[in-house]
Structures are given as structure tokens and as C-alpha cells.
Length: 108
Image 1 (cartoon, helix red, strand yellow):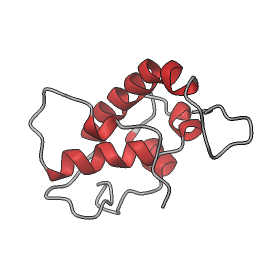
Image 2 (tube, one colour; image 1 turned 90 degrees about the horizontal axis):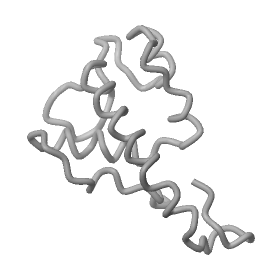
Image 3 (cartoon, helix red, strand yellow; image 1 turned 45 degrees about the horizontal axis):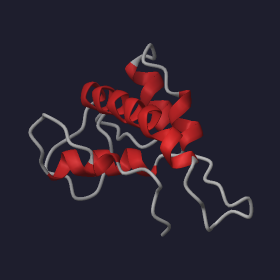
Image 4 (tube, rainbow, N blue to C red; image 1 turned 90 degrees about the vertical axis):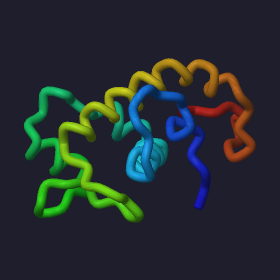
């Protein structure tokens, strides 16, 4: 599996961290940038769950190795942080060489 260019999982934050927190942040690291940019905080929980397409019938995000459930409220809070992180680091990542693309420039 190719590693994402993002490293939101390791970004410092003030909340109590547990295995579920790290897994959710890693989940957002692997989310396609174009998809993440579609996110609309005004969506209802139903629209959010349909858009992500990884929620269970119990309205919790389906992630492996989690100690607790991730409900839409936490998902919304952390994806907002992930979007802010990407906006902040995108200019720096775009300037780095990318050995996987013929242009030699990353395109996050």
C-alpha cells in the first residue's frame, strides 16, 4: 500500500489521544484530497454518512482496531481539523519532488 503524502495522524493536538483518535486521523490521511474537498459541514448526518460510505447501520464509522465508536459529531470535528491541516501544508508539499510522477512535482 502506498503511503499518503499527508501526516495528519502525527500532527500535535490538544485532545486526549487513544487508538481510535490515531486511527481516525490516519483514515483522513488516506482520504483522497479531491474527495475531502467535497466535504460540506452543512450536510445532515445522513448526507455525511452517504458521502463517506463507510458508516455502519448504527451510524458509526467503520474502522478496524478501534476502542470506541466514532459518531458523526466527532467525525465532523476531526475532518475540519484535517482540512485545516491540508490547507496549511499543501503549499509545502506541492514544492517537494515526487518520484512517482513524470513531472517530478507533487500534486496533493
